Image (tube, rainbow, N blue to C red):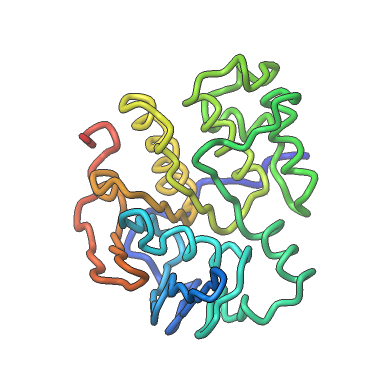
Length: 248
């Protein structure tokens, strides 16, 4: 396999939404209790955008991410990816969507402990029709010399960068990050954010980060604030700051 990832076009204003949520609701039932996780959420995500979704625990961030990832279906409204309604996909179509078009970075890495860093990334490439090489994915997150190490031999930041490489190696159109710095210290967290910003700016990858940490939102093109399942504010950062300048 060879890398198909090449630098994207010069960074400029995002052009046209490639993911569109319209009046999205999501309701869960816990016994006889109805929980409204999302209510009337409408949002456009643009190609090549770095978007941060910020909110406290229970605001609906993870629910929103799972709907966009095709891991759950909305109770109402539509989630469209390049004009395709994800909510109407069959189970096999949802699986194909997750395999081919979405890379997912988890807060706690979710690496397989019995496999090396390179092997963890390799598994991801075997699920995609047009992947890059796992070696190239590790090079892009600056872990070329750690490919033969097991997760237990890596620091938390290195494990998270392996997780990013695993998501990136599928060559997805969209990378979704669930609290990517939540389990990391301040310095390591900023290094992980630098990797994500570089993937966005240099390779035009569309990246959505959910976080409870408002300081992280300063690196994004736009910031969406959620509370109690509703969007309360959408802000545009005229000048996103470098990750190295983030303080929390």
